[in-house]
Amino acid sequence: MTNPQNRATAIAHPNLAFIKYWGNRDDRLRIPVNSSVSVNLDGLQTQTTVEWGVDADSLILNGNYETGRALERVSAHLDVIRERLNLSMRASVLSANNFPMGTGIASSASSFAALTAAAVAAAGAQLSERELTTLARRGSGSASRSVPSGFVQWNKGDSHETSYADTIAAPDYWDIVDVIAVVSGSHKAVGSTEGHQSASTSDLQAGRVAGADERLRICTEAILSRDFIAFAEVVELDSNLMHAVMMTSRPPLFYWLPATLAIMEQVRRWRADGLQVCYTLDAGPNVHCICVRKDADQVKDGLKLMSGVLNVLTAPPGGPTKLLDKPTE
Ligand code: DP6
Image 1 (cartoon, protein in one colour):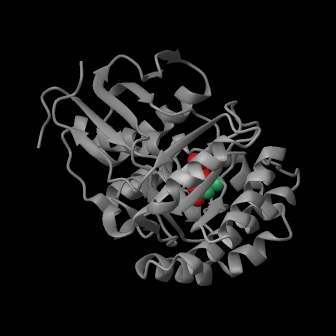
Image 2 (spheres, rainbow, N blue to C red; image 1 turned 90 degrees about the horizontal axis):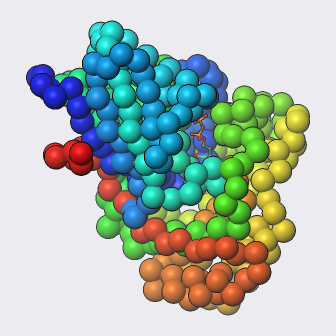
Image 3 (cartoon, rainbow, N blue to C red; image 1 turned 120 degrees about the vertical axis):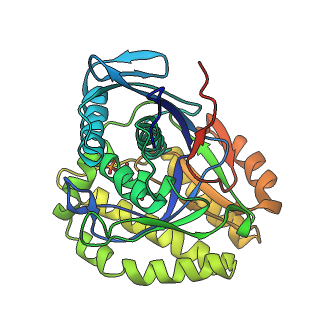
């Protein structure tokens, strides 16, 4: 297959992990210490166009011409794709998100999923979804989970080929919604990549990892049987464990703001009062409140009334990374 235009556009959603990825056994290959489970977030997306055959790698991100670390990271990922496809051409990358970056809504996941799919298609290559997940993983671990549709498991594996992601249930399998309470719009101080590298300095990481397979089993079973009570318990536990590791790493990482803690407490109270809602947090202070569809409006309205909540976003389960047939000019 060839692509005479040398150009393709892809759209990917970020994803929210229910069982978290935190720490690698191989930082370069991004082979994680534990498997993880997530759902893609519909409505939030990154659109990326790649064109091969230019003079030098370049990156325009949300309308800004990037030169520093952002370009280096994209260029390093293009190297991985060049090596796989036996290419020596350089590429221009045009990428835009419709959601705020660096706030715990993982933009790296949708960015590297879209970049991988667009770069491979622009080169005229066709790879299996599984291989695309492994390539996307090299750019950002969580990006592997944004490639397949809906509810997704990333199997940790022990090599590049065996560390891949796969759908466990379609987006419409379970009618849940991620109601995201945005409490800070500023860029996080310490990113996930540095966090993964320091995870093993926490005395608690070994304990977190030891129980991860069992939590993943319970979580997957809860998703497949749509058992919200079991799901809520294991999702909050897994998030709390990851943040305990973050806080006890050397140097420590504290992502919570006072409003973060207030929302977590409110979510637990709502659940005790009968709402089907639970919380989970990534490497940032924003709180993802996962609820069943019928309770989503009540959760959203309640969050909007809380002090410190700047904005509330809503995302149902989303589909896979997709190529656009006709790239926008
Ligand atoms: C807390 O995938 O962003 O969101 O591989 O260095 O890009 P890199 O890290 P990244 O880490 C995500 C961490 C997390 C948990 C999760 O999404 O599983």
